[in-house]
Length: 234
Image (tube, rainbow, N blue to C red; front, side):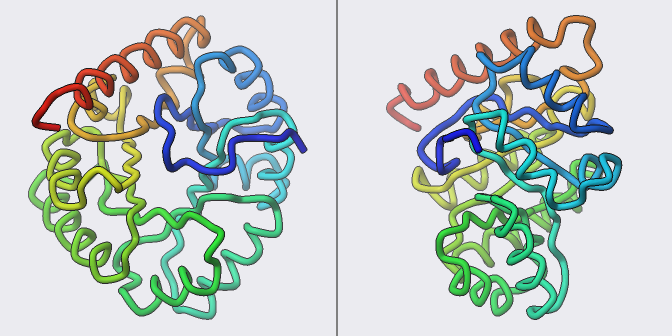
């Protein structure tokens, strides 16, 4: 396994969504874009379409040194949630997503049982309208404060919600934003609003030149983070 950055916290930049259909495609994409990728996201598409299931995390970890966020979207009772997290951890996952409405009890117990893992609270769907997304994000902020979970995924196609979460949770929170590019989020917009990472998939893996798009987006994200953190009001 390639030695890699052990945590998403404390770092920032472009997170590549490996929502492709095979490990071969994922590896080729990583090879093409490697200099401009700060982290990668693995979701159910790659787990299921590759035929490897959770073991695909270990396959990808062998070829990249950046942190891996496993977008497992855990949303179940405590014993099921803990079983899923344990399985993913055994395959080398370092960070895993879990829905905020599992509730504070389930989230707190999972955080206690797996203290070395970064559990990222999913706050809302990028496909939701702004009103519903705002309601969901507000609930997630409450859960995060109750449990002390300072890792959240926030819809990046609503930069105002990213800014809202950043204001409420402060500079110690690690925020990753989905919905960038194909789902309407402007590259760099979520970073300007408060995100540490922007997750991008289709704009890169469907591009004729994935490397150049990754470079362009990484530069936009880093520049907007630099401007935000340099501002006296950030």
